Image (tube, each protein chain N blue to C red):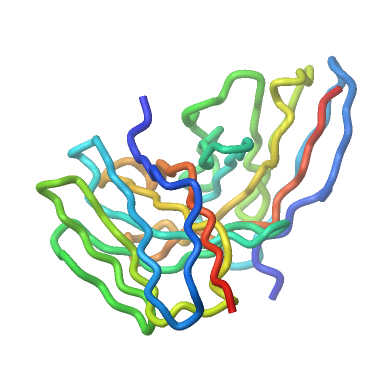
Length: 114
Length: 113
């Protein structure tokens, strides 16, 4: 039982390149989330998917797109990477039923944009 | 506008003593609060939570206290162990928000043997 799996673990991009961060969970969770963490900052919500087939913007959605491919998978795409998007990206999931089911996080993707 | 604030970037305590991590919030609509723990190169892991209808929740060595009038919560770890050394994030959410968490910036706890 892997939980939340993120790929790749590390990535270096040049400004203007595109890439997709992959996230999959094997816990049959309904809700999935993408956060970014910058040095000295807390985690900030980029996009989330409350259930399969729905996606919504979070606090910092500009420059990103998401796809909820199926119940297991939620990908984050950078169409034209910028140095400001250098960050550690965390995917998370939860059953989505009530407060007593907290977020489960993956181990992150460390992205550097040069 | 930082709605969840952890004003101490770091805290150092001796093994066996109490660790107290503090968190303040400004949004009175928040009704559920959580603490997450994060080791380097890993994702945050859930530690303990509290609903706004309670003022205390305890789980083993970890206790969270909530003071709604002061918009303040704290995490007590007793006794502290070296393995507790990590970054601790306070987070908050409100009903109807699809569990969108707002995180503080974190406090690095170091427990010295």
